[in-house]
Length: 460
Image (cartoon, rainbow, N blue to C red; front, side):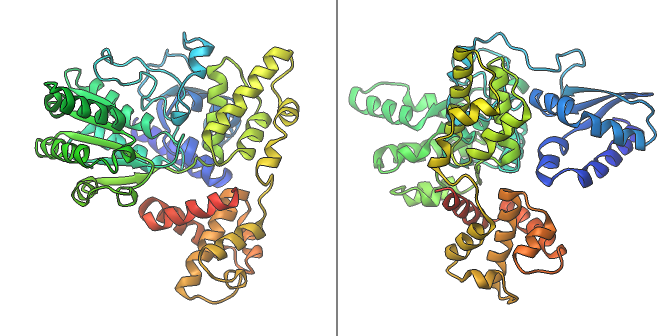
């Protein structure tokens, strides 16, 4: 991108940031780039194929209007995936069957298509679906995504081990395997191995029982070792000892280790102290439940993979009503699509409400500002009136800032409305507080855990 194009696009992004929500800007606009500019014809690179649809359907008019403000007469914009040639389709097309699409593991729902790896993945056990291009990035996983890309660019040199943790269905496996695919794309001769901890345990037991040869060589003669669901190795002392030695051998040889788990190393029970210490050497990053915009992206992406284009109201209905479990989100979508197909009715909001009305009985349909304030206060063992009061003691200020953040992220309240709910006259306090928590979530494990726990209690 030349200097003129870069300046133009930065100006456009600056205006867009003032007109859309922070979540929308981070999810859709932050990682875009103007790659071609000839008179009124512009080509904008976006992160993935789903983003193309969002821009074409939802944001195109806004982009063109702001381009016109910046001196581009009758702008015509083409959206392409970053790194793709311009003639590549701007909407997702695959040769997969609907059955194949729907069988994808719900634990890795954050993908939006399949990509062909640089070589056969039979020997690596990598799933061809799980690449960086097919990973939907949002505020809940952008730090993990950035770390994974850094690891793929310099395996064994940065963040070793890379430890990704979080609940079911948040994309840990997808992101871990995406590193493997990217390493192979850069160097087809690289030795990449993906296994589940269960496989490691079973093969180790076979090695002990039947004196099978080659166990150590298999795991220690690789360039990248990806181990999924590390929590299942806990309590198995002999297996942990073997993995400890495998870890040491790889780490000393500057080979990359990537591990996923449902908990951070220090929270995995019966994990030996020396192995826990090794797992904490690199970087441990949690992946949280996707925010509203990312959930919308997931719904629309999975629908597109099934050959169905949902209207925005239907997408938002599903995303608003199912917040705590991505597997449930996919299940609700599949239920809607199957019902619509069998009955010959449209897969719209009316059908979704009639079919999925039991969602209302599964959890509160609407979280209120009072519930957020009360749950936050209870979590920190303080009174709700203290959060809404004027005291600035540290043990009150942080809960107050978290409450403001949750009012914004869960209810999409305006800054003045948030200030009003917490008895503040100046809404700049709310802006500052929310920005502070957004940054803290990326850098402070304790804050991330506290926000995640309160959010979980809201929908329990």
